[in-house]
Length: 321
Image (cartoon, rainbow, N blue to C red):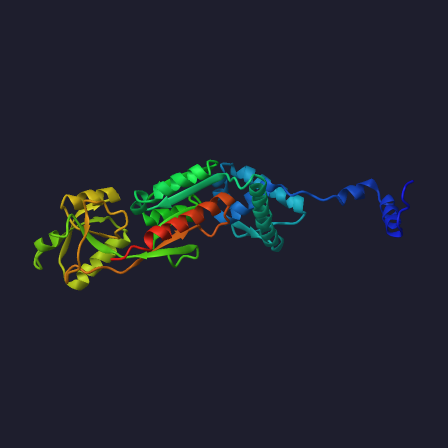
């Protein structure tokens, strides 16, 4: 025997039976396209559709078509013209907030149902000082633990790394300084020191003769700081070797072509930190920070960030001179 509908159920049946089929269909829930939402968020994070197109490997017309689809699905204007570009409307700002939450929940769900296996890609930039130390071993361990994650590593100088990060070409940058940036995650403070082929080279230095130096070319914060220290101490100097690579500086310093000024991180065994002396003062500490461009992180990138932070702090914090 069929159960008798309650008064409320009878009311619902009556109400819906009175509606035309067209209206019932319009009341159906609309499922937002996840790929469109991810493109939308990416464009806002990178600062424009052109950058999003490059980042996602799509044409700008394809990106524009997705944004039109987003407005069609929401039934609201998401963008409005301002000058030569577009900005988000009030509804667009609200949609962006919800889109981030939807994507984050989507990624967390996939991670959970797959037994915490993660996939994706991580583009990591770092200076040469760290590229030949413990970090390659860390990257190998991470890769073996998460074989579904593609790791791309770029070794460059600080300025170029930050430029690539801000353009969306990198996901993380481990760098000297940058503590004033809003995306800086401070990890350690390292000493800056003078480096030579051996401590005995100090004995060959005389107050009258200029000190030969092997340094990076402009712009370089180590070069600038080292020269300022020598000028304040009244020590004459001359740059006898300029290199674009850290390996070049180490080779020139080991060959006796000049002293260099850096942190002791990654110092080759054939080089030595020079002791303090009046004309060759030790420099100030320099902060090491991890930067993520203030962009939302996928599960793979969160795992990578945590691994880099933990390992870097473990290796750098004990360094004291």
